[in-house]
Length: 159
Image (cartoon, rainbow, N blue to C red):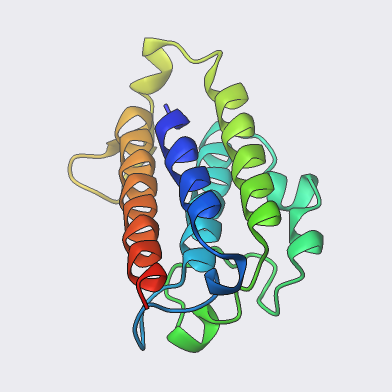
C-alpha cells in the first residue's frame, strides 16, 4: 500500500542536498524535512492508532532520535510556519523513520480481512468512516505530501 510513497520519498531524500532538507522553497511553505516527517508521523500515528498497535515514534525511539522541540504528540496538523522550521532532520533519520513507519503499518495491515475494512472507525461523519476509507485517506495524504516534497526539491535544487 505504501511502497510507492516510500520509494518516492527516498528518491527525494537521495536527490536533495542534506543542507536543503530544512529549507522552505518559499516563505511560509513546508520544508522537505517537515513533509517527510509529517507523512511518516501520519502513517505511524493513524495506521497504528486505528489498528491498536503502538506507534514507532515512541516505541521505536524515533522521538528521542529526532529530539524536536515540539510536544511529544506533535504530528504536523495545525503547525505554524515557525513550528515547521523546527523540524530539522538528516536524510538518514527521515528515511529511517519513514521505513519504520511503513514497516509497522504493513505488519499491522497484514492480518486484515475484508470484514475488518468495513468496521466503522469514526462516527462523526455522515456517512460514518470505515477503516477502508480511513486507509485510503492516509494513503492520499502521504501521496500528496511526497509529491510536494519532490516539487520542493526541484525548486530548491534550481536556486
